[in-house]
Length: 319
Image (cartoon, rainbow, N blue to C red):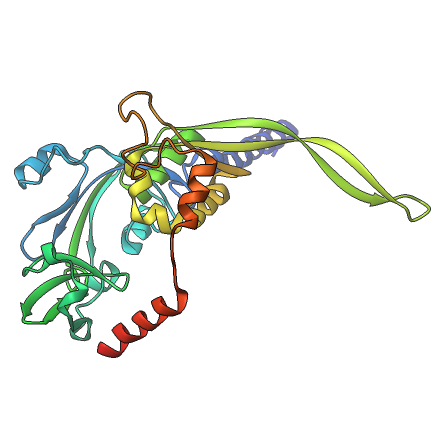
């Protein structure tokens, strides 16, 4: 091989190596844990094809689901956050925008197997009077269930999830990968609350003090300016009444901060003008009272703690 041929061969080899090195950069890795995606989906029971959830209004109407009470639009979910069933999440990893398919979700991966021990007999007086009928959804001792039968002072309540024991079919389409943090925040809140409130993210500058020691061992307080990313959430009435938000707002806020690299979550309550008028009627006639009037009213109240305790003990003994 001549010198020129050797040079040409070496150049060709270098070009091939360069192309080989460049290939991984052009390949799409697909969806990964931590990604936020907009999904269109419909979930049906595997046995009879009943629609239990969908983002498609036409599908909801065909299934005779009330389309006025809910908004039917694609949802933003965070992979790895438990927003979808584990088998669906496993299916989505590695997928790309435009991919679609159907995942078979076994009962134990969905809402669990049916447990006969979760059907219990309770006192009927634990159930509000307007819910004392078969099929009513009830909450007893912070547990959700549905009433099967009620006879006399006893009620039979099934605490299994209504879809326990059901295998499901999850039909999906990946519509978009979400990069905007405000969209991500609204999407996460929408998954938790079934209602996406208005949100905004602002970077604020704050002063922070740090305590150090000088060469003589004396404490020195230094002040520096730091930037913090703050998520502001406008609290809607539905959000304030949402039980999951009421009992888990701290965990939800921590999840938002961890996944979106935020320093703080601020929930803003907005009160619109007009409508209610004075507070007199709400306060039992005390709305217009001054501080002195309230103190006089409280002094007139005769509360005997021992008497109240005896009454409570008596009620417990009767039970």
